[in-house]
Amino acid sequence: MCFFCILLPNLGYAKQLQIEALRFWSAPDHTRLVLDTTSLPKHQVFALQNPDRLVVDIVNAKLGRHLLQPAANHNLLYRIRSGARNKGDLRIVIDLKKQINPKSFVLKPSNLYGHRLVIDLFDKDKVKKSPVIKPMANSDNKNRAKEMVVAIDAGHGGEDPGAQGPHGVQEKKVVLSVAKKLVAKINAHPGMRAILVRKGDYYVGLRKRLKIARQSRADLFISIHADAFHNAKVHGASVYTLSRGGASSEAARWLANQENASDLVGGVSLDDKDDVLASVLLDLSQTATQDMSTIAAKKILGELNGIVKLHKRSVQAAKFIVLKSPDIPSVLIETAYISNPTEERRLRSPGYQNKIAQAIYRGINKYYQDVTPVHLAIDERTAIRAFSKHKITRGETLSEIAVRYGISMKKLKRFNALKSNVIKIGQVLTIPSS
Image (cartoon, rainbow, N blue to C red; front, top):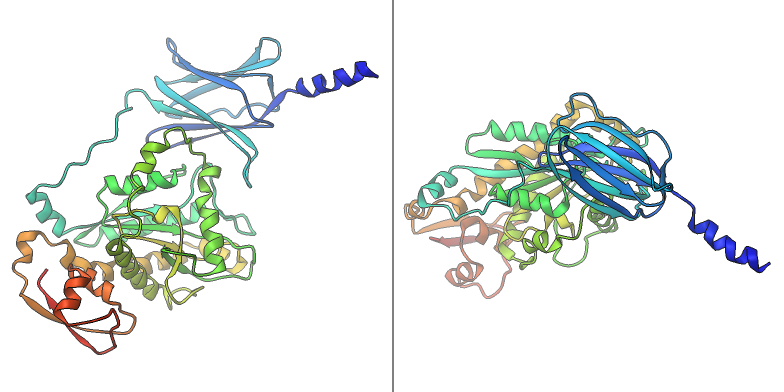
């Protein structure tokens, strides 16, 4: 009896890990390999030259099926082969077309995947430190006064498909299509320029999306989604800004939790978190940025109304990580609920995608018209007359008006002898020069 008691644990320990699948994605700055494994892999990764290749050694492992081979025209990968090593271990060799710097990490199971080994291959010739953004010279400020840069972020991508409709339509594909249409419309408008945060089918970490927008000196960040809800009857578009407190509804909380977990699905290494977190460990409650976000959100929601059905008729708030840029007004748009069969069908249509892009573009354009004075260069502001008048309309707040005219709330209240932040429809405010 005792003999079997000793043997059983050893038999369990000897069970080999299996490699169940291999996927790879190409991003602008790296190629990602993802190996699905049956348990947490103990591994070693290193690069060799003459010829260039990557070696992946996995302890106590075997192939569960043949590995996917890259296309002949792949920019980096040439061939993938494997063999047994040390009797029970597995060695995978990836023949490459150029030298690389590899980086690997493992991911625990998520709702979509089990254990994974992720290997990022960075082109050795292109590995450089992030450029340091210098303050703009006066001449740059003059040009910037005439151009508003909008960062358009298509949610999910690559390893992370996002939500999926009942008939298989993937969120990552729909939102990228909408984003590209929106970028084309913005770039056709004089005075505005758009950049795509994600240009193809690959994953970008949530905080890296903010970093890309900041490096592009974006004045506005728009994140586009088509999420799902556990109730398939839920439908309609929603527009979100970052919440200062709790979420504005159950759906808002649920969606924020799903989106914030994207890095667990898409795969982000946390060993360099100090660098990526540095840009967001600032005061996230900056009133000016959040008020500007609200102005943009209201403009976009107003244009979506009537074009598509709305889930909520007011701007919603939730703690989306992707909206946590302390210096860039940021808005997240749920174009529809892809979990709703009717909306899934509409989202597949290029014509419907174009309607959504057109509505968002019109909202951004109205925001651009409103905030242009804020972006004027200092020498141009002196040409603005000393005082102007503003008549309060429905839905406006004192903080929004202050942001619009580029002055502080304290100055606006003092100039109009206001003792509180309460204003009334039809009330006329005197706006001092900024």
